[in-house]
Length: 343
Image (cartoon, rainbow, N blue to C red; front, side, top):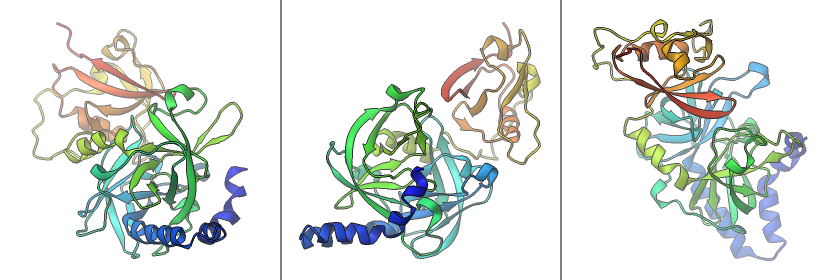
């Protein structure tokens, strides 16, 4: 099994990294790698949130992208809670607020209440070619819990490809470019980690665990920062955000689920995901092509993580206004437009 097979190697990974270089009688390269590790570690965070269901881990990784505490990480079930925390390299444990997310790219931006933090500049991220030597920083297997350093893996970019060519084999809504790595980087807890060059320049974000549904092999990959930068900027600018400005006024005739012909699954948990349970025949939702079991992710550019959040978001939409919904159906992102009022 992939995960179990590398536990012992991962625990001695720093020694392997140094020894592998030292055996090549290349002390300057070893010193350079060590300096890179010392510079990158303070820019990494350990992210903790929801988990435990069916053995899912309640942790993942993240990287600081501003001195003011913005953290780039993976959009996952770990963030499906009101109590996200992030542990910094110096051991400080801070509350993390979900600022926003882009489900299409499976990324999220968190905000910490902190200042003057060491951080990556996404504008200075670089692209690399196959054969480039890289380092992957992540809290795989949750080994680091306090101020312990994150795990570091040394590897090579074996190829670049589009995940679109793998749809149906590696199931994921993201279908853009990735760096395929020869190191076993995408393990539990590694999602949201950083891929950097040997001299510490940011290259990509480690993605979720992806397994080939045909032969059960795992894909080790990172998403280039260039593919994420525009979305991150949009989130920081106030789009695809998880929280609404309370000062915004609600319309006199707000939209409701019953009006568009949608019934969600029973709201039994505080953050029950907004899955569609029933679509009334001939309703606006039916005409738009919405189906049972669709998961509603976005209302316009507004992120909705729960049935409650979806209902609250609809309260700010006028009955006469069309709305755009982004759905997840069979690991595919779908956009539909609803018009409750018929002219």
